[in-house]
Image (tube, rainbow, N blue to C red):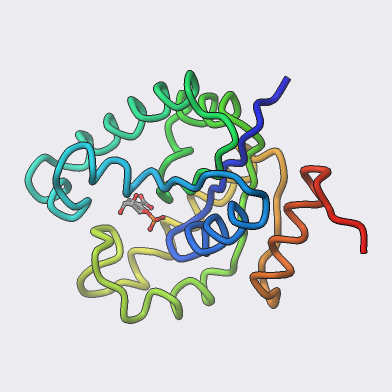
Length: 175
Ligand code: S3P
């Protein structure tokens, strides 16, 4: 049986952390963000880790964290880094941890949200759109495959999204 955890996956800027924090509050769950957990345990920012140790090092840190969470997590809403489900092992671990919800958003919406963003090494720098579009196209089927539920977030408020996830989880409050 699935554990009592909700795992949010999706591309950078799709709202995993904001939705996750609000959802955890609404359900009385804990909230964690894999990027923040990695930053805290390695004592460096994700950007710093990419620059000093390389992306592969970060990806290994992600897998190790998921292994730990698959043993320990209970009553948790987990927001994951956008690349998390790309490793097959990670996708399997995510499903072990809990119900995996893909927050789908259009690339146009994402590009708009990330416009003034810094601190995401894959999105930083010049030609952002030229780099992110193909990455998005490549990842979209992987997110869909990894998810238990695909939630189209377009045009929906945070409240609407959270109510939808609560319904998925059978935790909808009757009004
Ligand atoms: C990444 C997304 C980031 C972070 C890292 C790599 C990716 O997380 O894990 O910069 O590969 O898409 P967010 O999705 O929270 O931005």
